[in-house]
Length: 167
Figure 1 (cartoon, rainbow, N blue to C red):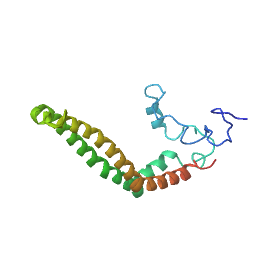
Figure 2: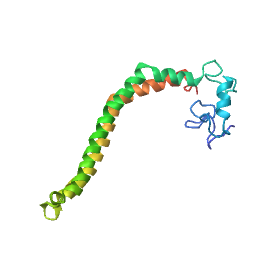
Figure 3: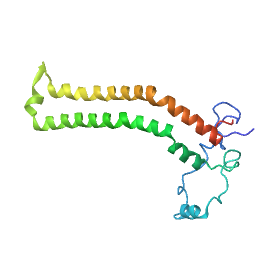
Figure 4: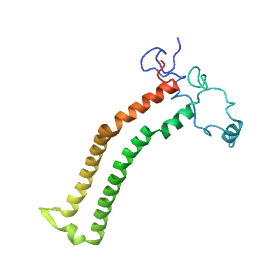
């Protein structure tokens, strides 16, 4: 019985060491200086790190991932991601910097009392927390509605091409 993470290899959730998502270090990791360059100049003479899978069939996983990265579906997922993240990040940074600048440049405004000892600075500070949670919720909603399904389809296609679904 082959045990890898405390479970037998056939058990659900067991980590398989021949899984293409688990197998390789990035080039240059745990290698002496210059070893990654030497391998890059030798071509594809390296031994396969896994048994069974795409390398045995002549398809290198790196080629598959590059093809996926160039695909229109992947580019669309990235475009949708950037179309939300860039404006949301800029809006939050402007809001945060406005709060800091107002605290420095307009202490009289920030000290204006709203209710009892509760002043404009405290309201704006609490607004920072509320904005953070609102943006996190909006990001999750955007991801769920606009990107997750397409990203999951890309993942399944990649898994099939790399042999990651063969269990």
